[in-house]
Image (cartoon, rainbow over the protein chains, first blue to last red):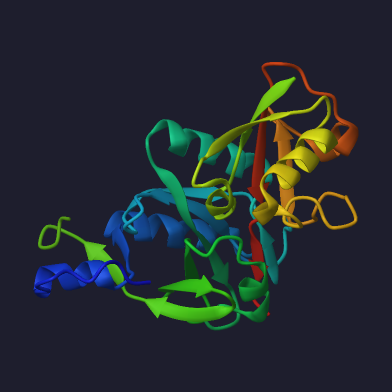
Length: 157
Length: 93
């Protein structure tokens, strides 16, 4: 997803032209830990943050499909999280879920059921011993992987 | 009566970017039909063209899912807040 092209693009402005998920190590770990706890079922949850893709908080939710192949975020939890985000001046900006036995790439089901073209879709791959985390935009049926920018003391904003 | 309807982000472009709109109606069915008539860009996305609730959309009156109340016949009171949210789902295949 691209923003407005600045008149004099330089290295700092380029960051605004490319969609990315901006998240701390701690929040990455929260998503992975929740998904590992949910095994053998798929784990899922919502991401609350800013429109620029900065994740402010991670919200594990129940998978009401209770399945190893599909997930459905508990709609009542979504309502609660959405309202709280709005009160905090933030928004639900994405969803994460795990693929327990397949690669962390959006499946045809993920693409078909993607609810919001503005969201970030994060996949936690648990197929191998080391969990992998990848993020995507899904727009009009098209998948575009985006970088996961890990915020730390060298990259605090 | 007029009730507030909270809209999910993907429907907001069809209502000029508003996150909440006020719509008249005595039941959920009435407000959703009026919503779709007032904002044609929403047609087919909350109610299907046959007039039933879209299976990938959840509608709440305050904290209650209308599917567990009276569905489209659910009656509304003046201070009720209706929330429309998409189903969030997917899978590995």
